[in-house]
Image (tube, rainbow, N blue to C red; front, side, top):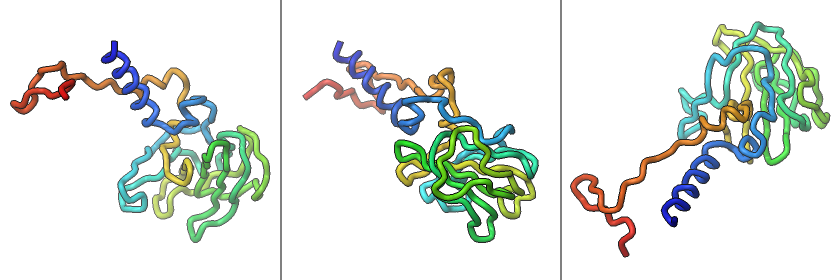
Length: 184
């Protein structure tokens, strides 16, 4: 019985650490910001700003495609970021922020309350120098980058977050060494 409870607790902990808590509390509560396919996925390296890291997901859409708020919230930022075009950041409940990057126009203002699905602007040319029109969609929880694709999952997708790990029976050997599990 103890072993079964331990396995169950491990499974729950593993599943809860695989995704942000908002996604686990109410999966699928966010909608996609554009009608398009994901063309580049989230890839976080130890240094999120290192070459090869991608702090969000890209949706391949033609420049000028409508961009909508993925969830209810408050506009925290709407405007230019350096030479990278226009960005919008929305603050949601629970320390979550979503960012919509490389827009051609913005139809939102800082401090504005926004509803899920409301238009916030139009997509632009995508990442600087990429030559591929796209919307970059990013997310942070409590200031740390998270995979925004997790926010878009439905209840049917939750099983993709759970990974069962095999348990080694007591006394089983690994690398020629007997197990010490359960011994004190």
